[in-house]
Image (cartoon, rainbow, N blue to C red; front, side):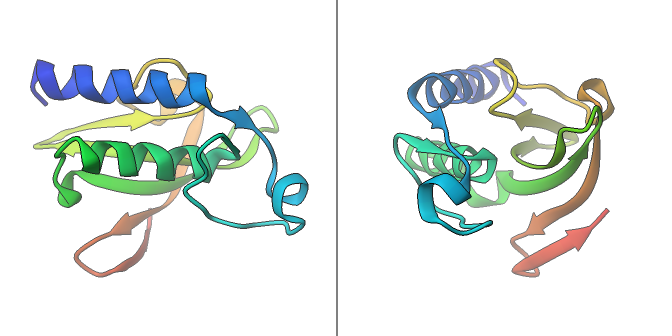
Length: 125
């Protein structure tokens, strides 16, 4: 990933994390799970979808962006993030972390599934 692409991903991650309030789907929608491009509040997948939309609007190609679901250690449960890919480099954008990071294990995550634009479906780890 070029420095310019990384800086864009870092800026979007930071801006979205700062601009949204964490609110569970139960609190916001009255259901256990609801995926939406929320603007001001949402849970982990909503943050990931807003980052996805912002990066697409900034010109990042669709094939470089994938949603991923992970298991988090320390009883933090199931979690969604956005992965920005360039060549062999993946950068994870996460509402729990201020800067993109490169490896799942670095943050105690275990990949469960990741979205494939080619298959238009989830792929298991």
